[in-house]
Amino acid sequence: MTVIVLALDALDAGLVDYFDLDSFRLASSGDLGTFAHTQDLPYTPEVWATVATGLHPEEHGITGGGTSEWDNPVLEGLSRISGRLDESTRGTLGKVVRSRTGERERIGRTDAESIFDAESAVVHNWPGVADGRPLQRAWDLMNAVAEGMSRSEFERELFGQCAQQFAWAREMLRHPVSIAGVHIHALDAAGHAYADDEDALRHAYARVGEFVEETVDALEDGDDLLLLSDHGMRTEFYPPDAGKNPATHSWRAYASATTDTRPESVFDVRDWVDAHVSDTRVERENDEGGETIDVPEDHLRELGYLD
Image (cartoon, rainbow, N blue to C red; front, top):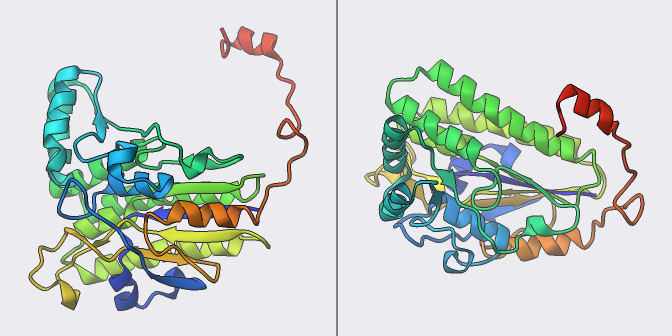
């Protein structure tokens, strides 16, 4: 049995209620405590690394000043200096550097143990822990919108990526996996793009909600689903945000679970997941982790796949 952890970046507790979307309201749902470290508002890589490890950024090492990694030591130093800038500004500067040098920053990875180091746990695109390229692609889309990308192209690219990530989570339910975690940046990108467009952001929430419902429908007995966000997103149309810099992060992080309980804080998630995995042990086919596959190595070498 499997615990699916969907990291829905910028899923805003207030907007879930404002849009009245039951798709995000599982058996237990509500506000999730979050934090800010190097910036005034919660910062994506810092918080998600904390969710996975249960540690403060000073312990897991993924911070606004140490999130990006460059092969060039000069660019690495500049990246650390720019660590307190917001994501949009950092993204713009990163694009300039890429165009001038041909180099691209990488999302840093913590050396600390995380929930995804557990037996038979798997992870896809988790800032600070796993491959950060899908997150970088979402950031690129946000910059492209600022430069005039059409709404139709933006949504095609954004929801296309989102569909792939949700499909990965559903596929993991078919395998002997204890924990499957995936980070999905669609609502953050849409929140930045549509902070002044209620209908467009409502549509984005509804579309992501449909993906959540498909995942719920794929659960079998003993499987659990946990939805999390690292922060919310201020908008022009949500009354509590009036005059508070729309398109910036809010403190309204959210958690929702198919169980009777949910984490109360981003620092609690690792313990919460560990407790639920202890009740949903994966059945192994044998002590080595299942049947092995006989690969015709000589034939693969002939085809050039192996050295």
